[in-house]
Each structure stands twice: as structure tokens, then as C-alpha cells.
Length: 448
Image 1 (cartoon, rainbow, N blue to C red):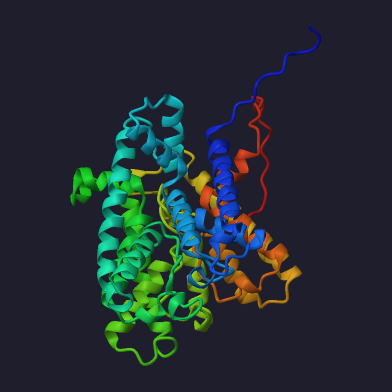
Image 2: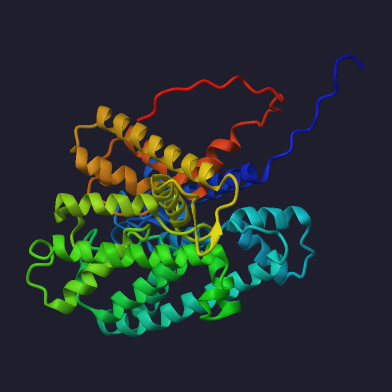
């Protein structure tokens, strides 16, 4: 036999996850294209269906058509399944079926599961998978019951139960899809801006879904003993609390006499907290996003860019990336070593955090430039849309449905990168090469 034998190319774990998400999106898009998926029983254009499937699977919430007004019950259920698969990850769903059927879970699947939930070690990964599945059912179930009780007063018991289930899953998965188009297109939760019941339940679901499955596991083991938490859990909880408190305060101050005008103190506090929490990848809104002041839009963009925590249903560069970069910045300014909680970051943590930050920012800037070049929409609206897509936040000033086909394709790519991780997405197409053990000579350059 002449020539070298062709070597079989195996997919890496990252490539398997990326291609798996693409397959799920395409299946969802084809289902949403069918006449049975729309209220008018006519086929929905493929690009609109694809956009909705990407937004659902990537748990973003940006929509080109109102979920209640356009999609039939079948279409809404397809969207709900895509949200659940996208939130938990299809690897976790696959492990669930393996556990139900009592099939043996091999090392390859365990490795995929580790990559999917972004945990540090592979040991005990199946135990963690069981906790994720049980915890998801428990939290989403509790949220569905509480929301069903409230919505039943407005829509009747059958519809109230369905709305409770839909919005509980959507909130926990940080998806931002809603059925409140029944009260007016693209209305989201604005009719419930002063409702403590709905606000508190939705906010709780968003936060629980956004702190990460590994953090759940740590809290379930160590309860409320903060000292016993892992370094990762401490960083996630402290950063999450800081972002919620600081951004809620800023929203309260900036929007006091704008979108919150006419509200009492309690309603303003609820609206401020909801705006701070939902901005970090949830996508719901209780006040009109399009009417926010410039300062609030910028603050929302920053929160969307940061996003939730690793291994969660949320997107963004993640709270740990933000924390590592900030701590490293202040440590270098003081001339010391970066660390906190009597621990220092592992080798490569700052480097990886910098890569994620820069890559996400570069993607946002490139997308912003191209969309501005091919549309005539306002800069602030497009910037908000781009950061929302990259952070899988799903918030919009209302321009999503005004985007042309090229701009929608770019937004879809950003949503996909935001869900699977921009770094993972890039690495899935790059084949690692062996680096020769050669070091080039050093030379000084001027910085800053």
C-alpha cells in the first residue's frame, strides 16, 4: 500500500459539545419552521425560526417575533425544550437518560460532562450530575408552583399553571423568554413591576441558575459555613453579591426620576434589583429598556458582558474572570502578588481570564462595526444588542426585529459563542500544534 495510512481524526470534547449544540439548534429550527408551530398555521421563514432556535438553545431571549403572539402551543413547547436543553447542556440530559436506563457511563462521557459543567475534577462527576438533575427539578418545580399560584389569578388555573411552568424554566435557565405578549407584544414582565411575589420568585430563580452547578454542590455539602467553601465558591458568591448590591444602588439613583417615576420606594427597590439581576444574562425586564438613560444602558452593557458564573445556565465572561482581573489589577498597582481569602490564583488563571476578556471584547467590537456598517440603526441600540447577544442576556431596546438578515446572522453567531464560550468556540476550530522548545531572546518595549 502506497503512501501513509490516513489517521482517524477524533473529535475533542470541546468540538463534540460545539457540534452537538449546532445539531440541536438545526433540529429546533426545522421544527419551528413547520406550520403547526405558528398560530396562523403557516410556515415561519427559516431565518426567523433559526434565530429563535439559537436564542432558545443559547438561553438568550432575543426574539424577532413575540413568543405568545406568533408561536402556537406546539411552537412554545419546542422553545421550552430547547431552553431546558440549552440551560442544562445536552450532555447532562444524555447522562439523565443513561441513569434512567441504568446504562454504564464511560470515561469519555464523564469527560464530556466535566467539560459541559466546567468543573475542576472528573472524580464524582456522576454524583454531581445526579445533584444537578435533582436540584433543577426541585428549584424549577418550586418556582413553577409559586408562579402558577400568582398567574392563576390573572389567567385562570389551566393557563396559570402553564405560564408558571414556562416562566420558571425560562428564569432558572436565564433564558428570558416570556408569554406576556398576551397583554401586549414584547411586554415582558412590565405589568408586574410592582408585584413582590413575581419579582422575588423570578429573581431567585435567575440567581440560583446563574451561580453555577459546582457552587450548588459546595453549598449542599458545607451548608452555610462560608469558611469551608472552596476558593471558587467564595469568589462566585462574593462577586455576585457585590454586583447585585452595587448595580441595584446605581440603577435606583440614575432611574429614580426616569423609568421609575411615579413608583413608591418599595417598587423602586424591586425595579432596581430586578434590573441589576436580569441584566446578567436573564433577559426579562419590568421597566421599559428602551427608555433607560444612557448611564443605565452603559451599566447594563457592563453587567451583560460580565454575565453569570462558570458551569451555570448563564453567559458572559463570567464572574470569576471579572474577579481575577480586578484582583490582579489592584495587586499589580500595589506591587504585590494577586490573591484573596489567603489563597493565590493558580498558574495560568490570569492569562486565561485575560484571553476570555479580550476575545469577547474583540468579538463585540467586530460585530458592532459590521452591523453599524450594514444597517442605519442608532449606535447605542446596536451596542446594547451586541453586548446582549454576547452575554446571552436577551435584553433589547427593541431593535432586534429591525435588523436585516446579515445583522441577524451576526447576532446569532454571538449568541452561540456566548453560550458555548468564545474561547471554546475558537479552540474547536484550531488544531493544537506541538510547540518547539525554543525561546526567543527578550527585548524591552515601552508599555502604557
